[in-house]
Structures are given as C-alpha cells and as structure tokens.
Image (cartoon, rainbow, N blue to C red; front, side):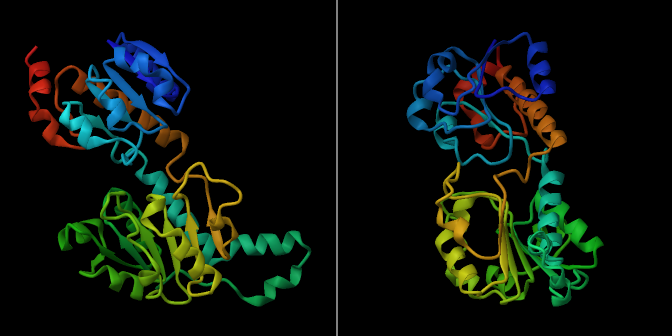
Length: 327
C-alpha cells in the first residue's frame, strides 16, 4: 500500500502508518499538483493542508481513501470523491475539547477585559483598573448556532459556570437538548437573547454568509460574537462594520474568509476584536488524536471496510468500494 501525506503527521500518527507497512511519501506542500504523480500512485492521500477539488480527483482515481486531520471538509470536493467511490475520512470529536476550551477562553477574556487591561498596563496606565470594565459570567446567556460535539462540550462548561445556554440547530429540538441547552426554533432568537453568540456549523453553500448585518443588528450592543467554525460563515465586511460602529461589543475570530491572512486585510483594522490563526483546535493532544484517527479510518476503508468517519456514507454503496470490500 502507498500513502501520500501533504505534511507529516504527529509522531504517533506516522508510527501507526509505518505499522501498516505502507510506503509513505511526505510532500510538505499545500498544493496537490506539486506531488500529483505520487497521489496518482497512492492508495491513500492524507491532506493536512491544501485543497483537493474535482479536476485533481479525476486525475487520481486510484485512491481508495482521502483523509483529513480534522472535521472541516470544505476544502475537499466530497461530491466528486463519492462519484468515484473514494471515501473522505474526517476525525469527529478528536479536537472537540480543545476547541471548546478556546471558546471558553474567548468568553473569559471578554468578560474580564484581559487584552485591553494588559495593553493599558504595558502603557503605564495603572489607573485603568478604576474603569470597572469587567463583568461576571454567572447568569449571562451563551447562544449556539449549531449544537454538535464541540458545542456540547462548550455548553457543559458554560452550564457549570452558571451561565444560561440556548441553541439553534437545523436538526431541531432533540439535537439542541441533547447538547444540554434550551432550544430556540429561530436563529434570530439566538442573536437577540445572547450575551455571547458562538458559531458551530459546517461550511456549506447554505451556511456561507449565514451571519450578515441582519443578524448582527439583532444582537445587544453589549454582546460578543465568536467564530471558530469557518470564515465565510460570517460576512467579514458586515462584522467589521458592526464592530467599528459599536453595534456589538466585540468579536473573537479564529477563522477567516482568506487563509493565510494578510496584515492588510480589513478584518485586522476592526475594533474590539480578538484574532487567532485558525488554532482553536490545535493542541498537542488534539493533533495526536486527529492524526491517529485519520490513519485508522483511512486504513479501514482502504481495506474495504466501511468507516463511521466517512463524510458521505453513501460512498460505501458505490460499485468500486463494493468490489474492494469483496476482495
């Protein structure tokens, strides 16, 4: 078996790959075209960074699995992969605690005004302590757009802190209540009621620009928006406008419409904004779990065994996969 990897996995993941007896090629590149000949010869592609769209999938039909070390798959054309009988494997739950902790860190930072306090003190303004900018989280409301695994972990911590949690999910009441929060049947109600709104949905054509000026105008002037999902879910222009005109109190953004970002991007000129470079799910433990889960899932399907980690389970009905499973 041959495996192409865009970038080396954590040592535990690489060791697991070696134990399969696979011949491994590490491209150290985010552009699949730079190592397409290796992908074409491979049974498995593990993509840590880079896009993998239909034109290149059509040139790499020998693949038996495409692995992603994470849960976001908007950079891979799953529809095209399924058409050719190639399962796309993700790692649900592997980084849910890490991402949840990041959301809580943002909430804590906002509630105690940590970044502004640090800046003022560095500037020699000890008297800033008298401005009383901090507030307690107890009794505040956190609203969740999407109530999956990461949201449920975040909700558990918020509830433990004495916060009220409400959620909207396209799967309805059962999904929200399973996550541990009160259900709202309208996304607008989440924006109206919440002191913090946290985005937890996958990027799809339907969720692109899900949050625009319309939703931001529903928020309290004292409320904060947190996006650790995908950049294009929130309209960056509208968010900048809301921040710069004090329509909301602040925002925390870990994901952007264009990545890598550039210093001149307008988002970095916005007021009261915390930014991090798409690192909400990056911690040693989380990356290790993502690496090993990805290898395990890819190895399963490459040997003709269906995996719960496949994005589109219909791929296992494809004649190509069925032929593989019968070997």
